[in-house]
Image (cartoon, rainbow, N blue to C red; front, side, top):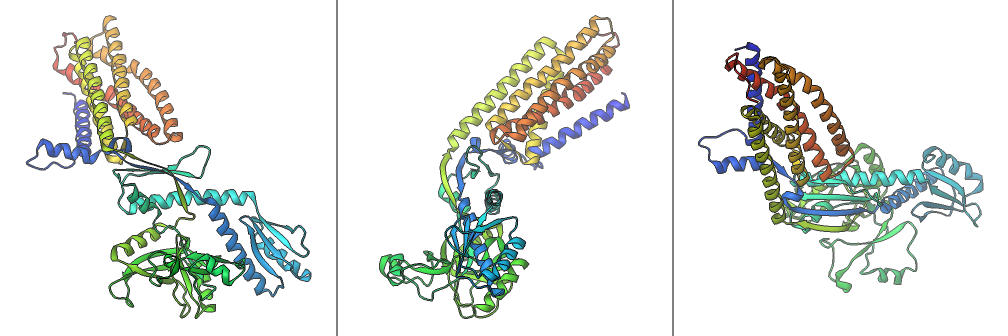
Length: 544
């Protein structure tokens, strides 16, 4: 036998063994058919349409992030003006994108202009306030608004994906939904049928903020506060206590409790470096969450705590006050969140905070569950269609091309093995459109074999010997095969790049199947022909 042919055969065998390993895992003895079947199921990951699960459409409330940016600017601008001894009546948020600086000393206007020009030049525009003397309005630029919106949606999407992965929900799909509203995110969770569980994973502990408590008194309701104070100061906000706040008393209005907080947070979840759970030393039997801040946040937090020793600082989670500990000393880069935590709830909260805080709250637009019966039905019909198409193709090739048709059958089977092995190796998810891509791959594989076989037949009719006809047939058909495959791969690649969800699954299986088909229909099939020719009598005719 030609030594070159031996190396080709060895390479094909190694490729087959490699693919089988990724499809079924390492063999154990004794091995039953049921075990082999289970291994195959574990290797091939199924999408939402096959496995069943939950699907959510979320809308990120980007206006909250814009308002938070405005509040932060108000706080920092106020601090900068005070540091430079600038006299003014007030600095407050007029609305989500406007800040009013009222009645500033005319002789100190240049200081305000310099602060805005150097620190906020690319974000805020300043102009005289209409109808007010010595007052100015800062307007958030449209480009800055668009940048905040885009960053908020991107961060929310990445945070949700990290949380789902961290909590063990595998193979999720988290992507922009697109359409008319770019603030929407599609979340698909294969294997998760409990929508309440999915929503808890996504939204629990979404926003962390540390704020100064501006009023030592708490109030049982908003009306109770307004009865004592005719107006809420511009820089303050009333927020309720969380349901599990330890300091929550039982009183009127079902025990509701409201805190008066500084509107601008000094630290947010985006400033966290890490978060871990630990035992609460002051309240045995409960747990707490310890957190560490980034260096930039520590530079803000240290002076803040130094200036407010003896005051309460509210730990706000998802727009409610979790606790309000007293600041007993300067805190630079670490702190803790206390509450009625069990070990599991403290662990979950720490995990959520490590994954990142949602930059804005989310609203659920759509909720749906795909049952496993629908997935099983899709799998059954998809597999039936694949097997039936493969059997029909095999029978046709064997009848029409006789023994040489067996060559094509082996190439098709190997093509499917390579395709499924790639899905298992890469962790790609098989969806119902992906099964359609598999069936289309079978058709393309048959087309390639038919091209080669017909060219071989043509060369034999022209009087060439069988070995020469095989070489010429493969060489001449190769150019046509490459042309057809390249054009289809390019089209499928565009579907993969610009498509979403099921369309991308179809494109992936089609591209991989076509690349594998070039290997099987040309390299493997030609090697089988060459091996068969070495076993034939030189004068015998090729069965094709």
